[in-house]
Length: 111
Length: 115
Image (cartoon, rainbow over the protein chains, first blue to last red):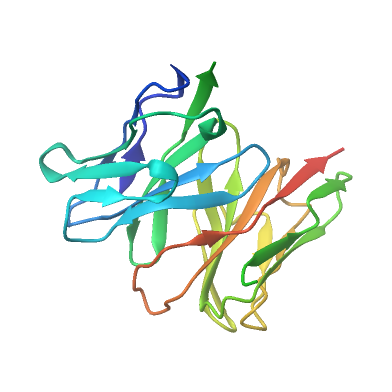
């Protein structure tokens, strides 16, 4: 069965520091992978997605993610975090039109 | 502007009452979904619909019901059979039907509280 693991429940970074959020998935074939961001009390906004091709994917708001098949990972990165990046981040894997979400990583940004 | 709207934003229900959450999209998407979000548990699929007049149960369908009479609308009813309905409910839609994968786009959510 497909599953997604986000090992970090909560991460705190300083504004201007780099960020990496981890995501590992379990899926037999080449997965479709997504990162979403959620501000408190809001819906999910798509940051980026990987379907095929270049394993380094660029997204909105300066985020990028790298698909590593050998590690079954799709980690999200940002070189310099802004205070407005504080939110909940969800990784998801899709097969057909079924999505499987991780439990999320909550990001706090300190001045 | 195209998008997904959910109403109301906040909903309060007494125990034993049924309530209906609205989800409307003007993106001309075929597929629509309902998720439940609880703290620390991510999103769990309640129901989904790939085409009008057809829908399938997700992982936690017990105590919920849906209809899909129009392409634009996918209302969710939380019945009195749902024992712990207090949660944040998210509606989503995507373009394809027939099992193809594409991005899901989300509405702003409805927070349901049982009093």
